[in-house]
Length: 515
Image (cartoon, rainbow, N blue to C red; front, side, top):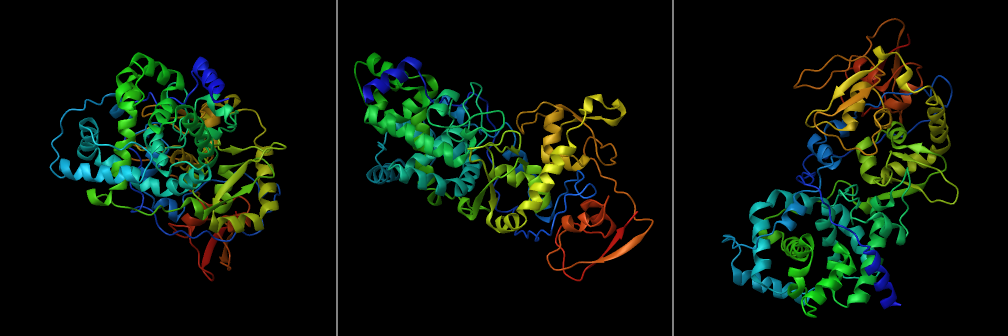
């Protein structure tokens, strides 16, 4: 069976393919910019004509204090870092890095080799890669170490379930820079960079709404099974990793062309260029992560550990925008936790287990208000069944030019629209934006044009007419209060009462214009 499987793979040359993109720096360290957040209890949501209107997504205190650079890099198309470039352009030249003497490196590699099934033996080429990374890529490595605190516990659990070496977790660093929506020029997608055919072979669903190659858990299970099969075929982890990158056929050809050698380092010169640098990059990252403390890197705790989240199987179609609105959870956080939903919409299909992942502190509030939330979502979708904006008066639309630092969440809040609206109006299939890109937007709230250096400032309607005083009750949130007053948005309440964040205290008096 193993031989037959090998022949099939060799003929089809199926394998995950490394990213062909030029890359940018990975995620900025997030610990300094993340703060404790408080999600208010959701009160009853009435899905009536007056209370289910499309509401403005507003920033809350948590989102307002987040480092915008983190959002920009987390959702940009350039998050692959410089990994692909560093792998394909390895020169193995001598690197002057006195902070890591050769004797010290040899001793550490020997220690690492003793506790892993990978062949972590010293050679000058590997020394060159390690020192080059330490000298020239410190910022990117620190960012990856920070982000790894979120993903590595998940990887380790699934690798252990498949009885695979836990060090394989470092493969995702080399493959995708730990970006779940990473996509190469040839279509390899996700943390483990599955091609479409290989993903399907290992049970990963890909449709117009969903791409499970971007699901951290499902893709990790699939990668574990695929790597397990490759190890069964080659009997060597170095060769299995090479086959994962370039396909089993390329590895078997390299073995033939090198005269039958089976050691990776002896057949490396006959492998594709990116695969030739693939294992050295993997081993270099393994060494640096394992000895991060010794090299001065900081181990930060992720704001939300994967095991501090939970899932809910959806009972109706619902969008991440709608979830963000009713739970006052930043849309960017929901996108981060639910990367497999391509259009930020979770479909409901019979016999499919599509789930929404939320932080633990939000789960209970969602479940307790589940029926009213779905009623709200249903009414929202029904309201959007109208003529497309392109048939509206041209005066109702504006053209927005993307600037450095922009991301869809920020732009949506400027104009009071949903992220999914912007994607639908402009035919966007992902959250990726390019500087200078033009977006057609149909604003739902007043705005003033921005200068070249500032964002557009929202103008809220003034407090006038029939003004009432509302006393905040225990469990109230800005969203639930806005539902009590037709035509009043969260931003209205914040502007009228000079509130910058989203936290409310019982007994607080709020001025509300009922006109």
